[in-house]
Image (cartoon, rainbow, N blue to C red; front, top):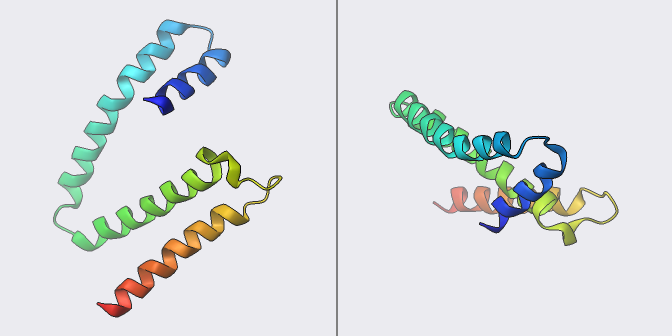
Length: 100
């Protein structure tokens, strides 16, 4: 909920129509659910591609958390903390794969 409120506050400063903004925020969960269902229906047969896509998305989310959402990670426009977090995630993933 705090992320949604922050996004609404930031977008409402640039958006002219509040009703259009509300419509966008109401449509996003529906579109996301539909896309998730379609992706699962198309990729359920090929587990390897599904796993690769999920891994790619998890790295993107991790990068987003450390680069955008965690503002204290910024060091005067230096991307090192975000790239370091993703690299650490990758190192842990490779280590887990080698152990198992």
